[in-house]
Image 1 (tube, helix red, strand yellow):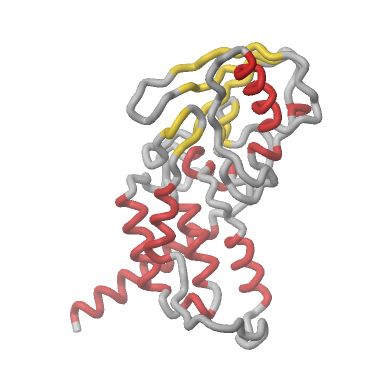
Image 2 (cartoon, rainbow, N blue to C red):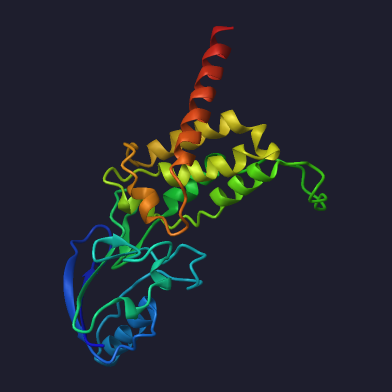
Length: 253
């Protein structure tokens, strides 16, 4: 395959970036998108240039590192896949492909296509956990959980924190990410004890990090590679209202 790549190049968050053009040839159709970038980088290095910086780790759609906006779509065209799972057979010979980083103020560019998503880590640090005694693992069936709740919790827990929901949202909202973390804990007995405190802290941190508000356009769930549903946002709102009312009642007592 012969392709024209329009790639965003930027030294760091404090410098001005620009689109650079690369004309590449002999790209195999069976190559993944990241493998294609590897081939391009090899050519750039052989010509004495600076290779394109992009984030990656597992290359199996698990780690969430490959945060690329491909032709204006987070993770590119395709449903339920990450950038590393996108293959070149999805593109046409001679096509022009635009490759940019995820665009959001809370995701500053580290270099080229790599962004800093540590704001997600800080949301998790503020409440995305349960406080338990450590030691040997308890039996899996020691706390009965209804299958429906267990399945719904597991679905929410499949979130890989890639940030596609933020990049897709016109408001750069992190509600889908935050709600997935809140949901998978609030549905289980182990997470319900700290539920009210958790949701208040995580939403507050989300706002402090500069993420926008949710206006229910649904772009987040449409582009989510793990198909996290908007029902989790509704659950977060329910948990947040409950937490706010409980806090208000405590103040009046």
